[in-house]
Image 1 (spheres, rainbow over the protein chains, first blue to last red):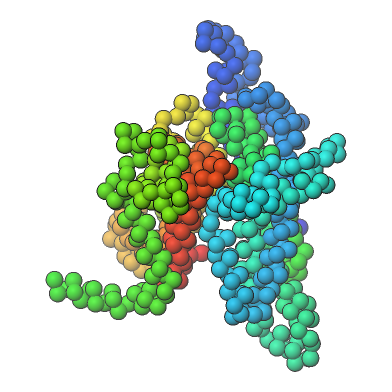
Image 2 (cartoon, each protein chain N blue to C red; image 1 turned 180 degrees about the vertical axis):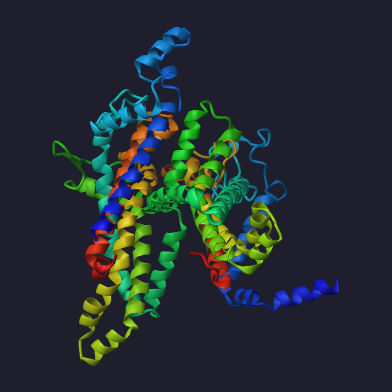
Length: 322
Length: 306
């Protein structure tokens, strides 16, 4: 088990270093930083002097070590676009994205699991068929199309919900939250729905498939023979045994919630990290792009590691192996 | 001719045709896909207007609603956009561009994946571990994120992007973000196939590694690759539309479906819903049909995908 843990941690560190190196390459070599700092009439000698002052003439591995050291100390450079420190920009935008992703995940789990249980218990009922059709739509339609349709229905036609922004936010000092005001909560509904729909359909399909499989096994028949009630069979015996793959997928999908928040934030003009990133791509704002890549790398590697640990905790067979 | 007829007969009696005829949903999906393909590639002939001929576009016609709504006319069945371009025609041309970009990026991903997968599976050793390590790292991230980053880096590296470069960078970005699945599949199949007798025989004949890989192994591992290709086509179309919708894909001078949706998105609040909802529906239906076709093909051929 220790061997397994060490191997996973080692792999994570390797991936992180690879992502950091990529991020460093982008930061240092895409678009010449010297050219972006000097004017047209700067002489070659002055450019060279600036280059050595910035340390750009040193061996690449030393520059990389320097980059890692600076990153760890929280210095991510300065945005080309508005001159703000990138670390501040990220800290300022992070709460919006995390709140959106968390609410979307809760929605996906809270709706997806019950729907999956129902479809698993009654696979042929017409309600199950309807759920299946919805899930096909959720998988096929790109999230931005779903977002636009929601805006058209709830925002423009029926005027029920706000269509952009976070609404009123409450400043807690280190964290700006939209969860405490009614306009903030209202603004959150459509983006969270759009972001969570794909994960919801995925969870529903997984739970459904798992339930159908488990309910057909011998130990369920045995449980029935013992005279256990439906509720106990479905939840204590059935659901429990379908949850292992669900945990893995949900964990891995948490990361893609962050990735897809780029799209959802653009549709709803949600002032989070995704919108920051897409602006940086549009304006070739290299420091922000490279910092976002690093951020996403850390998030994904952490999630993968935690999922592996959870796997170990949920399935005792893995602990005795190796 | 007779041999040809016989072949047709064998094909028509095959499981593939049987499973196709049995699934109504697949037939509907095929018909829809065909309609989209004909409409898209026949656009220069079939489209009612040429939306990119500046002489034919009249600003006076801007923001006309669809024909069945008051104020619309049948010369613009689905209405017009903010510049007076016919929405039906822009959708047809846009679908063509989306399909071209989707097909080219799937092809690129396929080529990269096949080459790396074959090399990795056939030679093993150092090349194998490097390629599969890179694949592992890339799989940690969702494809759309990889595509966005590649696209962003190309854009930043080539300041002052021209139109063709934007197109190439989108194809390149999507192609690079989808190769892993092909490489893994091809590697897996190669590992199985290379132990078989026909490969041994070829080696005994003294054929070189590249001849064996390309002429012997490749044709025996193509089935799962083609199935993944069909399923990936839908994903690639969505990826292109997403990039374009985010404003970092196909520019608005020659819009794809995603670009059209982005342009129309601003008008949804003022009530001109048709500019964005029609291209969005076409995109949704197209992706749904291609997805259904891919699912059917996968089940019908039942190859070793993983």
